Length: 420
Ligand SMILES: [Zn+2]
Image (tube, rainbow, N blue to C red; front, side, top):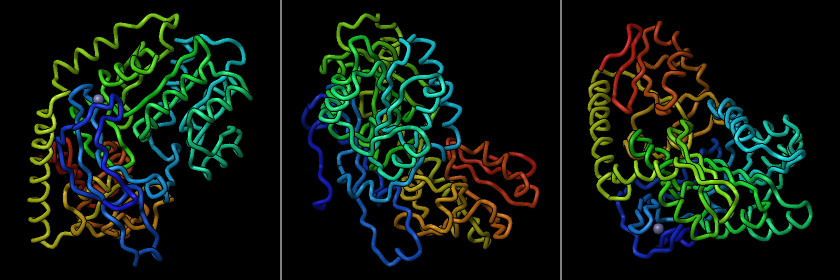
């Protein structure tokens, strides 16, 4: 390990020492470090990607932590670029407003608010909104677009300042952010500090059970430090003078967890959903290393099928490209060992056009260039969006192209339909 990273030796949530290493994934560069043409001569450092399990609380986390200034050096992701998030955030905001009636001019703070996509839904309903996000440029653009956003890390000091200057928040939300926080104790202290006495903290984060069940292993990358279960978070909130009062599964990001917490002793009753989900996790054995052995086995079966297929296609001199250029694609390419196999990747995000993938430096083109390059096969690396991609590129199939879907079951899709 370099000075720019360190290896964690205790659980992020409960501090239990000696976590058990349950899975060594292929080491990768920083998953979001897509580079431009003039950066091609720079070597990109590769970091270990080892997953550990806390035997005490069941939290799963990566052991090798890259310093934030390296990890977020090239951070460009904006929520609005994710194909399924806008509709999801609308439904999510409406469900919060329906289930938790708020006083007039209630105050909401979103931690990790990105471009303000979520807060916009609350602003429309007349709430007083404030975003906090350390990605300064994105925060500034959000502010310019009408969602006031502070470009800094959320911590106890900021929470105190906000409380003193603007008053406490009735709701604090945090979506797809908690997994990126190394010091969770400081984070939750900041949440507690800013909430009104009867306020709620609502969050969404990747859900470990769905990661395992849905094989969404490519959500594992260095920015995601933790993979939470309800059991682990329930204990964590208890240990930090808060109480998890509701939990549910949502479909975003391949399977996420939505939770609601209040200050300990708050007026709301804990709903049965929390214990029901913990029971399901226990029955599944989510806090045992066996689930990761099984996940690896299932993944490797599909990986071997795909590599055999690619070997055969190459013997027949077929051209093969990929579709997708996200953080997940980096984990995918390294784990499946596809770095040398693909001529191009196609993507729909204009920010990625003419960039190159982290480490392997595969060129990325606009998906419209499929029709000029005409590869014989395109592997849908962004496999969670396979239906949308196939629908959008029916013309590619009509012209004789074929899609290869790698997961959850490898299959080939051509004009006539799916071939297993
Ligand atoms: Zn733990």
